[in-house]
Amino acid sequence: MGILMKFALKNIKAIIFDLDGVITDTSDLHTKAWKKMADEEKIPFDNETSEKLRGVSRQKSLEIILEDAKNKYGFTKTFTDEQFKELMERKNNYYVENLYFITPKNLLEGAKDVIDFFKSRGYKVAVGSSSKNARLVLKKLEIENYFDVVIDGTEIVYSKPHPEIFQKVADKLGISCEKCAVVEDAASGIESANTAGMVSIGIGQEDRFKKENQITKLRFDNMKDFLIYLYDISLPK
Image 1 (tube, rainbow, N blue to C red):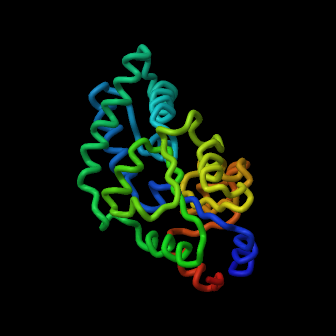
Image 2 (tube, helix red, strand yellow):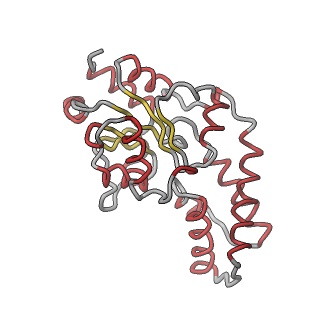
Image 3 (cartoon, one colour):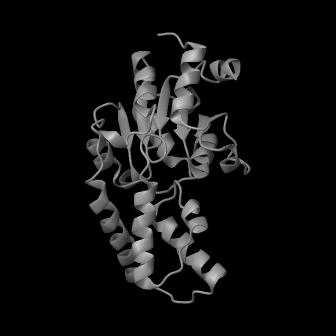
């Protein structure tokens, strides 16, 4: 594994991190916010549907929720464009309310150390997150000034698995895509990285990354394991 990783990272000049599930984990906050909105509208919402929302934009998430509710539970209520927008905004308001309780203690174990590892060795580090609240989360985590570039959901047209977000990060860094690696916990994000021609590094169980074009170049169960392997291969400073 170490030899494979060292080869995979040999020509890399920049590391792009997803935010949720990689640096911190706000998935529970997203789930609670979607569940609260869904309950208010009597929209069926289960754990299987919640898992599908990982790494997906707000609009796509609501589309998935409504599609699952229809296909699995026979939910037939429809919403106008204005009502659809209001549902997304309501969910986001619930989510943002909870974000204010985030502190540096919500950094995932090993995440800051991985970022520091690459920064100390001269790599460019960046965030590419579909979340429109990414900058607020980084501020609450007190790491908003750690990164050379941050691109969030307010700056893209196409959400993951489209490669736009990572391509924009690379362009802003001034580094070609093939010299960038992406650290992602979502299959849609891995697909984005692969499509962009970047080295994809998955964080999470292997069965999460099993579909075509969602196979990771490298994978670790968590950021702590990623850090251990980085020290094992001893990338030069």
